[in-house]
Image 1 (tube, one colour):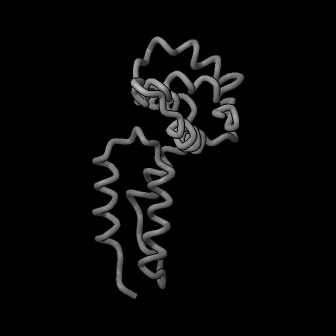
Image 2 (cartoon, rainbow, N blue to C red; image 1 turned 120 degrees about the vertical axis):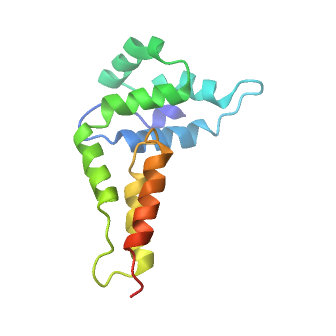
Amino acid sequence: MVQVIIFSGKKDEDAIAHLQNFVKIGNTINIQGIPQDVVLLRLFPYSLEGRAKHWFYESKNQFKTWRECSKAFLEKFFPIGRTNILRGKISEFHQQKGEPIPEAWERFQGYISDCPASWNEEVVAHADILLWTNLKVM
């Protein structure tokens, strides 16, 4: 089932989308007495191929939890340039002239949903404060 969404580590692949899809599918698999964290960690290599699968088996001793694994995965396959672009879009967010608040909010939430889950919550909370100080009723 998790093999439906394969990630190989190519530059044109979206590591965040892969993790989001993997977790959505992985969370449908529940094994009594086994923590979901363990299920996700054990299933994850089956969603990988090529360079990404090689990375996983080469690095698997460096992480013991799903959170550690997903963070390491994003550090490897989510380019720093993309991270910097997203941080810039969030920290410099402004409502566009004539843009209704619901549309600005939707655009802002799109930036947030593109962020790696490993970004700490303080960055996202700061971004929410920044958003509300930059919105204007049109």
